[in-house]
Image 1 (cartoon, rainbow, N blue to C red):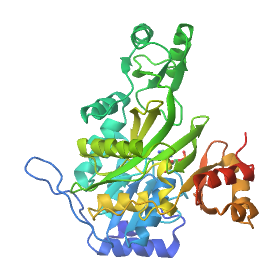
Image 2 (cartoon, rainbow, N blue to C red):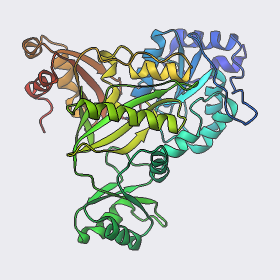
Image 3 (cartoon, rainbow, N blue to C red):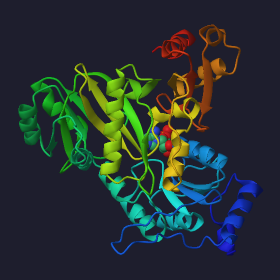
Length: 428
Ligand code: AIR
């Protein structure tokens, strides 16, 4: 064991136990976990059994829930996150450093048998370095594609799956031309970096074009934007699909998603759309994950129109908020499935065990949700609903920040929705 491995890692809070686990990992000879490649340069899949260490770039709630699920199977985890005491770092050793710190990324690689990430805006240099120096079965191509809306749409279309009509936009003149071609209403979005409704504007009338341009591309010299035709959808659904390193593909039942202020509020499963549409949604998600040769999870958000058409809105190459319901309501959770996929185990059974409503707990709901879930709950008893509380351990609670969620297991999703109504926490 090299002394630097013992003191490495910024285990401010980990104490003895965390230090010990790193020492054992180092002694086990985890010096090089770099990938083996075929003659073509393609990374060969490796099967990693429990006992192996998964390095996670990012230490938020998604990493935490992945680590909790994977630890139950006997995997070890180490996370890299700039915030001390990050949600994942509370349950695994943590390297505390900036995401673009290459030395820290190298250290993560040295301490891991396989590397994954729990958010998609991973620094391109770090992604390339990790792909080179360690085993990253997800590769950097998937990230490269999903970090950019135009590349993502092209990949979805290449997999034979429809997206809403769109145009690339780099100037106000191009925006005006694109709006004339597509017809209003439209949505203007940044090609990179936006999430939870940030970096986008709905344009309903021609007079709004200039303001939308200024809002979405403030001060940018050569902005990369996308104008999308606004789809008048009946509802939004998402499917989480998984593909293992050796190519097995499975998807979870679609969730019907309800957003408030552009942030996910509820996921309802089974989605309240005909079974035929649910089946097609799963097929499309599986088609995309296969078409892209993705490894790990791919969350596919879709719009369902009045006449039952499906358009893919966006992709996320990681566990997804709309898949949190799987933690209590499916045989395999999305987090276990991700670990299985990257470690090249057979994928788990994705069957739904019970109807479920997932409700997000944002900063403004935190106190009330903990109260409601931790005291005698007459409403739940009367409705036959079992609330399962998940809190992420974030040290700072803010309005609109995702602090946790509750999975409401129920006989009928209407009962779960009634519980949300009756607890009175989620009214604005
Ligand atoms: N995340 C990543 N992409 C989308 C989401 N929601 C998760 C990841 C990340 C965390 O949100 O787990 O680490 C960041 O949350 P916050 O509240 O610190 O911004």
